[in-house]
Figure 1 (cartoon, one colour):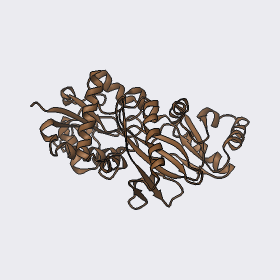
Figure 2: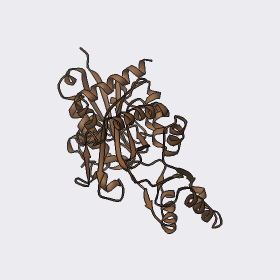
Figure 3: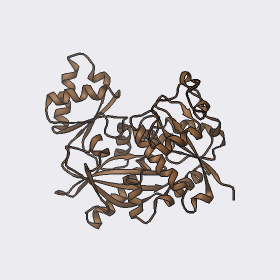
Figure 4: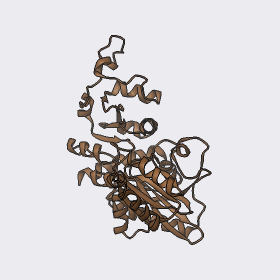
Amino acid sequence: MTKLRVGLLFGGCSGEHEVSIRSAKAIATALSKGKNTGKYELMPIYIQKDGRWQPSDFSQQVLDSGNPPSLPLTDENNNNSNTSLTQQTSSNLWQTPPQAAQVDVWFPVLHGPNGEDGTIQGLLKLMQVPFVGSGVLGSAMGMDKIAMKIAFDHAGLPQVKYQAVTRSQIWSNPCVFPKLCDDIEAALGYPCFVKPANLGSSVGIAKVRSRSELETALDNAASYDRRIIVEAGVEARELECAVLGNDVPKASVVGEISFESDFYDYETKYTEGKADLFIPARVSEAIATKIKEMATQAFLAVDAAGLARVDFFYVEKTGEIFINEINTMPGFTATSMYPMLWEASGIPFDELVDILIQLALERHSK
């Protein structure tokens, strides 16, 4: 049996570079386990923070270490006599390494901008090679919180109140900005959340409780993105559900995240002990069933494919469920919520990786 060559694409030009390396390392381990060893040949391709694609031998070194290289390769230090032989095979900027042409199926485990926003998916589409995960449209809509919410509205999925804002409105003349803040206060009240529309892992997000905090948060968010969204705050439990499939997706058991911080910010997400995960979530069967239904509806609403994690707010006092967001390339470490939810649903990590590759092949064949 000829093995499929899996191009494991990781790293990338985003603030979630290190998380991507950890996710890729876990996937690489899964590809070397059980039945996967006879089906797949791993071809890791590491993308530096400056956008350079590195060949498989160097990329394997990054995977083994679990960390970015201390000295990113450039055209200058690539020819330095002190660099290793492996480093000297590094590709130049805007070039892919020779191994890229040998890939049978891509597994782009890239998080955040330039990874799960449709950009890399467009490139892989042009290569005419199958790839794991959503296509250009699903990835772009899953990344842009404004476009995502419009799609959810169209699908009839309940959400908290929100208002879309642009950088030009925030950095406008002194007469326009106060009126913008007046409108937000009238529509959403306090507390509310200010978020850049196209960043992941809670980067640039702020919870605000006053006019001065709102003004500061809007200015800060505008420094990250030209599109900003402001959402009404809600006192609720945070539930998550994993989705797997293409045109007929299925949902996992429901999980819950509990934390003591003001909200689920970057530090809380990635600092051990800052948050507790409960799988399955401590909710009734009726609530869990509703969450699963809404998760698959959200998946189809943005035209996602392969995998996604969908996040919800559950207001226990009223029984209301609001969809928060969809993540089309969620964290994929052994301790990430997405694979843990499927583990609890009867699909172990190595089998999950296999299924995702098969889903990529299925979608490409249609």
